[in-house]
Image (tube, rainbow, N blue to C red; front, side, top):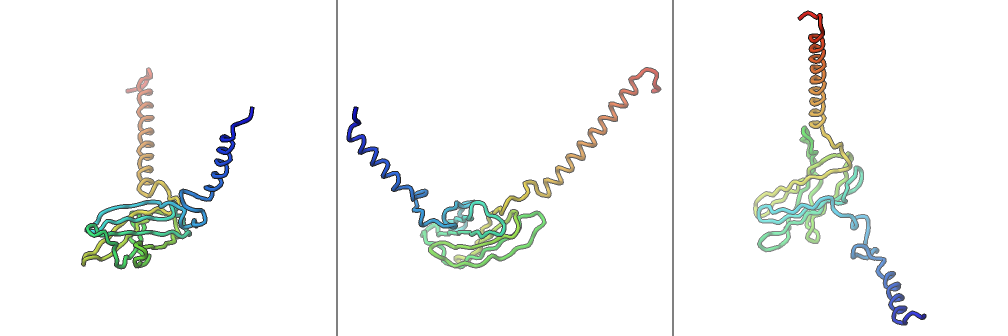
Length: 193
């Protein structure tokens, strides 16, 4: 039995068209991808502050120590929809309990409706990035957190709480053993009370 001619034409068409789309990834041609464009952001923050709607994104998805990363910052006026067109200053500080060291990353100008700030962190940890700008004679400050690398899941406060819990458990066990020993000695016949 011979297969119908239309079935053969359909199979050949499907096989040829499958090869035609293989150079696309997520709807984008593979030749337009590079190390900066094919990674999703680690976070995407959208907020309204004053008269502006702000979006901030950190790339790559998992920033690592001694590797380049970047912040993309967008701000548009709520009423007009016009992009912010002033200098934006980026700062960073360690997100630790006792850290107050702050460092300026840079000041950026508008580039195709986006403010782009690059960074390289030497150590892993939790950081706060601050974007500052002045618009309509009012200062604006936006803070957003960022994690670089794989910092310890338990910080100094968690370690202190864990140590206190272990000490309390040890004291409780020792006291319980003393109480049981005392009860056993008192329950034996012939012991003085």
